[in-house]
Image 1 (spheres, helix red, strand yellow):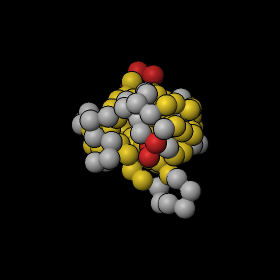
Image 2 (image 1 turned 30 degrees about the vertical axis):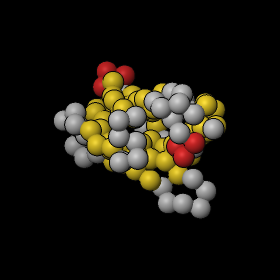
Image 3 (image 1 turned 180 degrees about the horizontal axis):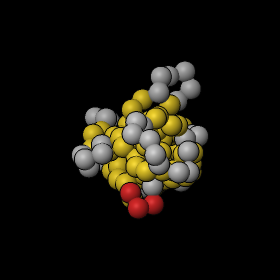
Image 4 (image 1 turned 120 degrees about the vertical axis):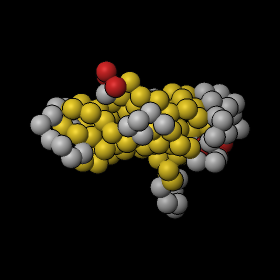
Length: 120
């Protein structure tokens, strides 16, 4: 199983980006999935979570601006980021607990980072 993150880039403050995290391999189901972000010298920060049952959770710093969603048919998780601020600049990582076909227990996988840069 692999997770491929994409969609990062350079955007002006107030703009929008949509990140994608596509899982590939012999996948039965994506359970909980998360987006994290990290800036140099700081710990990785949990930004948003989508749970198996469909509920979501967000860091206070992004509530009302970011939306996490999933496309179960295509094994993809998205992060829609609106009203971006310079402080949102970071490398964004996706992470998911994934059950492979034939397995009852999910394992945690990480995607590679995608850089988001917001200019003022």
